[in-house]
Amino acid sequence: KTTTKPPPQPSPLRNSKFFQSNMRILVTGGAGFIGSHLVDKLMENKKNEVIVVDNFFTGSKDNLRKWIGHPRFELIRHDVTEPLLVEVDQIYHLACPASPIFYKYNPVKTIKTNVIGTLNMLGLAKRVGARILLTSTSEVYGDPLVHPQPESYWGNVNPIGVRSCYDEGKRVAETLMFDYHRQHGIEIRIARIFNTYGPRMNIDDGRVVSNFIAQALRDEPLTVQLPGTQTRSFCFVSDMVDGLIRLMEGEHTGPINIGNPGEFTMLELAETVKEEFGLASGKQDQLHRWGWGWGHLKKYGMHKIVIKHESRMKLAEGILLINPEVEIKKVENTPDDPRQRKPDITKAKELLGWEPKIKLREGLPLMEEDFRLRLGVAKKK
Ligand code: NAD
Ligand code: UDP
Ligand code: UDP
Image (cartoon, rainbow, N blue to C red):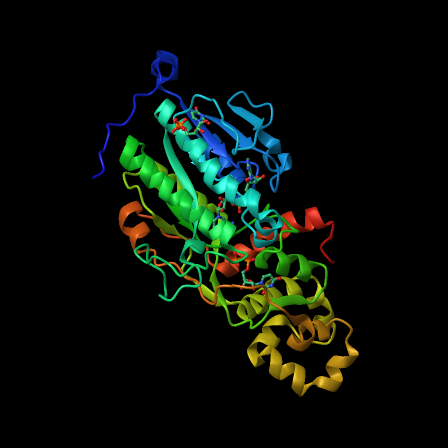
């Protein structure tokens, strides 16, 4: 039988008059992609003080440049697998490498981060009486046998595979959250995040959206991993941050799926990136010289045009780049790659009044400037 203890009282320090109007918020992993966007949003509220804790494994101070030195902001280099003593009201616990190549790089460290890191943040939440939100993942559903995935689905996860340090690590982190909640009365929130994209994504972390955009801007072939029919559902980062804050501020523990239900195969994603970046980034000019506009090509369908006017097309330097055979390169996949993934967001809609606003086609172009700047690729005239 489980006993539910009352929530611990906030520390006397936090009860002092000075703090009553202010909210002190800890963001672990705040120098990372989602974390830094979350920090931007939290800092907009002048009542918030934000402390970021990060070991800079995959994150960067650059992502927080505009806040360094701000009186309501503090950045601490710290590894969450070590105990941490700070006084805070809320904890957004994001610290964990999120891309397969980084979490597989040192799998033992990944599982320590998920298990010991989450245990430490729960110990901290217990000591100071803070509410804690864990960014869990759609990977807890593994290679799902139920589609789309509701929160009630228990998942289909390989416990001994190369992704397990991450999938099983997050599953244990969720278990710890609920055990601290039931046993110690800690106020918990669990978000199951689905693939998220936007500016500041790590360019070299091998995730599909950042790979495709970097490849398109460098005029390299887009590497679609086999079979290419596997699906993902991509959520723009501002929608994600909005969902996380609503969950933290709301009354529901979760787990709640936060993601965009728009589902795409990797081949469709490659085509979309090509359309948004390939032609938009200057190749249009060559087409114009031939009297073919992008609208023109779209009207007839890219494939047909390329085949029908092959001889003419071959003469134009840039035009081959719109030929799907040339631009998309099929490459080997990695083990245990989930074949399909799409969130059921009924709970987020009903309990948080949240749903994503930004469609993939609207979100992808919002990454262009940031990626050009970091890749050093100028816009073609
Ligand atoms: P990210 O790699 O950009 O950010 C993670 C941050 O955590 C980095 O700044 C990294 O340096 C830091 N970190 C890693 N290990 C740490 C440790 N031991 N101690 C302190 N800091 C540490 O990844 P992201 O995409 O911003 O992901 C943030 C969170 O969201 C992660 O928990 C991830 O599992 C979850 N998530 C992300 C996605 C996605 O599509 N981006 C999907 C599902 C879940
Ligand atoms: N912890 C921490 N900061 C705190 C309080 C606890 O990092 O402010 C760590 C602590 O070192 C421990 C973990 O959180 O490893 C769990 O703490 P808890 O008090 O729940 O368990 P215990 O210390 O009794 O094992
Ligand atoms: N993928 C791809 N090309 C790439 C990188 C990834 O086709 O250059 C595929 C990968 O096989 C997977 C999907 O894109 O099916 C999403 O991979 P990612 O690493 O972005 O995230 P995951 O959802 O697997 O954690």
